[in-house]
Length: 319
Image 1 (spheres, rainbow, N blue to C red):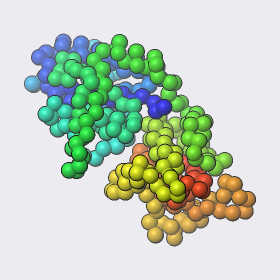
Image 2: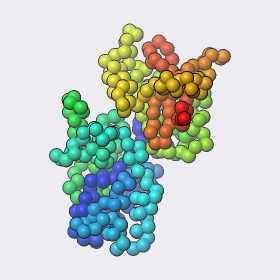
Image 3: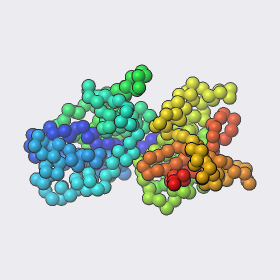
Image 4: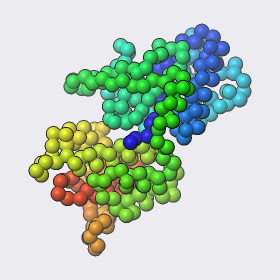
């Protein structure tokens, strides 16, 4: 089961507030929902642009919050401008993905990002400001997928702390360390054979919850792919997984370039997890963007050979 991720709907603050007091009430409510998330060990992800959002017809965020008590100013701006976390640091969808909700294009917004993650089996929900034009749940989001069949998903949209608390009380505890990530992956992905030291490269690096979630999502795809064979041939589901995640400019998985294979041949060669004295050359890898983490594994994936994951850590082929 993937960990829940909650994103602030940046489209729910677009200059609609009539006065400072109504805006302050909305911010107090939003900060209360953020505090509730943190109480349950979760973060509420914002977008960096929110620090400059239009609040009223005449004022943007920095001007409006000058009227707040200083402790409230400080807490809000530390979140928006310094501490985050920011969902765009882990953005999965691209500017050429066309998402639409309520007859509005929502690409490059939290609504589009949440929909993309839901389409890809992630557990992602939204938190919206009130009053706004986004006071409904779920939000019906359409993905116009490059001329293919349009797809629709309902994205849960929280407007108050009560619904968030109900969801988070039923959630599993979020991961808090790379050690927990390793234990979770080894227990969950039974179709993958992890090298004994596969996760060791993460040791000593600060734990990044968003990156841990991306690692789980990619290992889930590998684990599923290993089951998608019949009579030695990849099944239709396996072919869909391959087309979706292993091909194209935004593929989650790719091979290293010929130059990287030559230059980093030694670094991309790993001890065989089962056969003493043997090695595996594993340039095939899964990718996490922020920070740049790679998952190196044996290739090709077949039904009659082990799928080995030999390395989970920071990018090896950095020049």
